[in-house]
Image 1 (cartoon, rainbow, N blue to C red):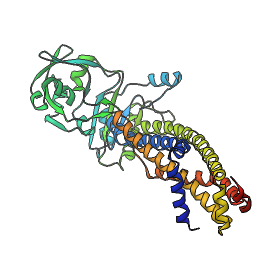
Image 2: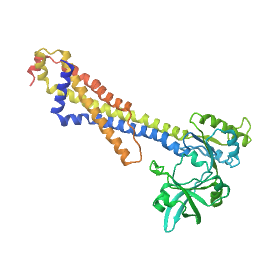
Image 3: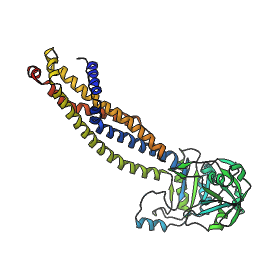
Image 4: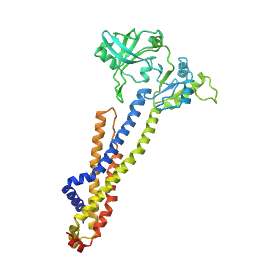
Length: 414
């Protein structure tokens, strides 16, 4: 019997028992759908963290000199106390870093943790809980900020402690209706009046959290209002991604000299990129990836056992048909191929249905939540391979049993 004919007979058998075939494949459909959807969300999150989250915090082609590392997750008490004993990053450190990095595109100083929040008022309108932070003029270059209206802060604003500010897009939109109308207006932050110099173009959201709800003040003015933070951050933007690692080494050397550290002493600061976030997320996804195969295997094995039982029942139901085929010249190989093809077709249909359900679930997750989803070719290949392999593994025994039936006894079967 040709393979295409065996597949055709298998499709006819599946179509004639549609409801039974669906419940037979339910285990495989659910397992494959779970695999595709979870992998799509994880891969989407991996790309999201690399492309947007790390870049939004640190900047593209940039790194930071910090008192505390960019660390996600729990740290023990001893590590926390050790970090708290570090000296703060001070404005006096910036000239040393600048001398060590003459090729840097921009070097900025910004207020660090804790970042205060305040209500922003204009006439009878208020935007609550906007982040307020102080920066030096090059900060907008480091963060790749574009302006929807107005102009950025200048070195003169910082040097003369001017009461001016730059708004995030959401703050300007809620207070004034449009960025252009915000420029030149006077707002109140913590009871102090500031003139709006510019509005940053919309940055969007990251995991549902808006990155446009802030007020940016000259660092010196910010310190007059809030005092110096427990730590400050030096942000450095290099011209290319290739030069970041070299720049980090030179910045580390400059900071060690500034802090007068002995050669054997460990750093009392951190030179960091967004790799800490990426590393933490990679560790978390590895744990998830270790759990997913176990869940999928359990579902696939259960689905395969159901397929084997259904195929054994099919052999029993079609005993007379097998006898007729053998009496007309069908060999054991033909019978075995027929039932094996039917089992593989059945499981492959389950894999395809599970793949479609997984893709739909991934799209639904992306549309209904802030979680991104990105379907990869290898997950599609794994889903289809699972469908085929289950049919082969769990269809062999029913096919062999059908092939071994004695034609005379099969013809007598009622």
